[in-house]
Length: 470
Ligand SMILES: C[S@@+](CC[C@H](N)C(=O)[O-])C[C@H]1O[C@@H](n2cnc3c(N)ncnc32)[C@H](O)[C@@H]1O
Image 1 (spheres, rainbow, N blue to C red):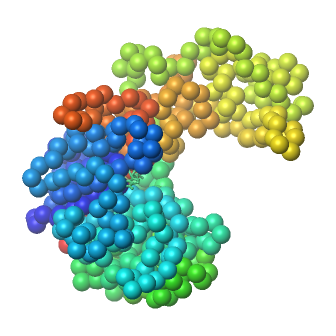
Image 2 (spheres, rainbow, N blue to C red):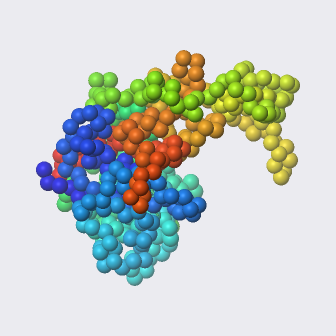
């Protein structure tokens, strides 16, 4: 099998790399128990956390990446701002010299405002700091045959004041560079994976690399996504032709949001919403071992980890008092005196935050009631998990962190459990290496990494399907 040279941008802790290369010769879908022969080889990767740079914190994602994949003569990690290697202001020659040649560019990039600031002699001018234009610059200079990107599904309908414009700009720029593009908003849990995480995956291929004849057939049955993640159309099929002039799209696009799966060739777009088709018998093809939240738990091992448990009896130093709208019912487990709800324990705080409330607050305009509906206190172990968010770590009570109850004890999820929900190897983020020293990574940072990462099994499946067509 011929090697496929990959550049991984916005690498985080390496979700794309794990999905494409596997880990120590084993596959993510078997949770690293079964051999995995992969032609993909990451030759260059890049990661930089701007908020850590501002606060002076260590670049711990880079340290984790270095620890797992130390540099070799044919694979280098570049731990600095992407703007320092692929700024749209750089000459093509400079970018060409800084980034090695590759067959495939991959990355999960931030969802920002992609509007075009102007068109000048050098070409289109994206807005400063908008990382899409850095990707665009690399594609323009290096022309990899394949591009594989991941983003929040909001990208298909951004920005709010002009639905779909940003994705239209993306598609039009890729069209301009000679790519055919297909995309699909995939919820990993619809295909047997242990987390309900819905992200849009985008594949672009140079027209000469993969030939797409019938657009409808491509998104229905023949395309890479349709084959790897089968589905049936759900709702009408929409067609549109993108303008060639990017500035015109940026200023005047008015076709609305993009649907959840689609294809674009020569500016012609065909798309639809869909329903996943994954019979129970196929679940294990996507994730052999872990499909439900209950499957990924550490159980016995957690007895040595008291910081993850919520002590239901330990009293707070001072009770917390919350004033409710008169007559508003709150969770019956909480103590109440008239309009005042009293929180006496750490568990009370979780019950309160996840529960229904109409809490008195004061703003510059005067008194108002902040209202929220009820969420389940604990997560259902018999379902795939809810989406992991970046603030999942840390001991503080929260409305959105996962909370589970086992044998009457409440606890948060351990970083290994969060890694399993993304189909990472156990303890992938436990240690980082910087200046030749190993450093233990704290649980809140590990949770942050998993909130940013992707479900590796999705990437593996796309990689497997794509390589058959190469
Ligand atoms: C959505 S996350 C991708 C996570 C990754 N797929 C993984 O599996 O861990 C986006 C990443 O882009 C990084 N990033 C943001 N701005 C960047 C910049 N200017 N240069 C390089 N990386 C950047 C963030 O730190 C974050 O790790």
